[in-house]
Length: 455
Image 1 (cartoon, rainbow, N blue to C red):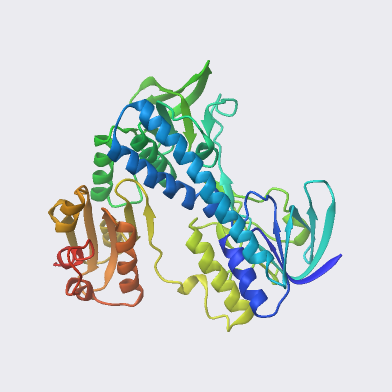
Image 2: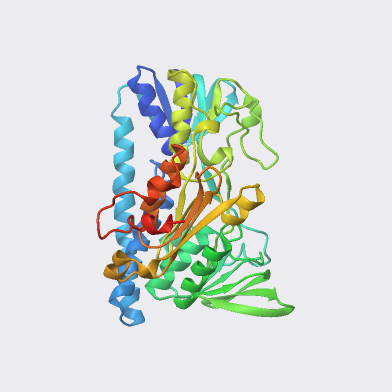
């Protein structure tokens, strides 16, 4: 048996960052990762980095145009490039931790024996028993597959992870689900040249977002040939030969969407398989997530959870901030918690990207705010015209009494950068006039703040 001050189960963003900090502070760390294909975590291997790489390559392909065969060849090269990118990042992440004297990386399935002991089962069946003063669960999440008849047996159905291993560009792609992951893949494959159909059960497109901006996003996607079907109930998935079809009911009628590939983008669930949390006494929420307090402690005081496995927003930068919160509990004064991390901005990498932070106009009114609303049509901006990226709409919501920014939704080129500026202003409690009256370089997308907040 090997004894460590810290055992981290899961080589994701939170885990690897915390491991480095603890080792730097002189503490011993065991990093347990189930798969040698997941060093560095979900983001760099099967999520953020590879999808954004493909998004970039798809946009280039769309600009080049050409026949479907030409686009198909560019797609094949993009998949090869994606594999090279993730392989290199994975190896660098492994070496970065493995090179630390106080960190030992073990590749195998980690399972609790009790609240202080973890057994690691390697690929060859051998085991290693670890004892830890403190243990951290950072095992992430995995795609959820809904119980649709025929779906589990369909060889042409993929998750967001397996979809990026598909080597042949499908002529027709059906996306099951209308969430952000599905939107990104729909945009990517449409730009590569696939005919894309999105099917969602909810009646409203992007229901959590501002209705006006959501309408602009939908219109843009539909102009690019993406068919969006809302309020549909999928009843069956059929496969015959080298093709498939998604059968659904909408508006009282039954229809079929043909496909050479089906993407199942219906959310993700905590990855708890094999952890044996019961043996450690770690409690779960009603949703099946690891239950934590504001300091990310579980029901066992010396066991913490970080990232997707604890529920909430599933972003790599949340996992990173989780590591800061845990570090504050272990090495600091414990002041940093989930309750004071500030606003969380996020971006959906459709083309152009859609980003948001804080409340929508409807949510702000619902919460009792008297609001002022700023709108900016992106096509009026000099930088957008220079880029030839004039699609989009910016919208900001301000408290009319205090002048504080309540939220913003930006559907435009470079929105993934602009939204962070608004987030910082919100966290700092700055009045909207700071953004309105700022002196920005020209021509840039950021100077749009002058007009967006001229309210």
